[in-house]
Image (cartoon, rainbow, N blue to C red; front, side):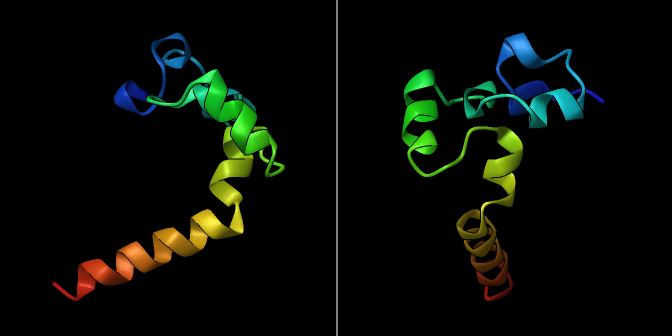
Length: 69
């Protein structure tokens, strides 16, 4: 699968499993500074970020808001 604009250029040829184990800075637009901040919240991987209960809640609210349009 091609991840294109979802991940930093260095991670474009990696598998989904590798990216999920990578630091959040593997995502396009995030930096090592973001890694430090997220680590303070106990988030050290892309997978942990994606499964973080607050990220899931925010995504659910955003999806619900889309239905109100």
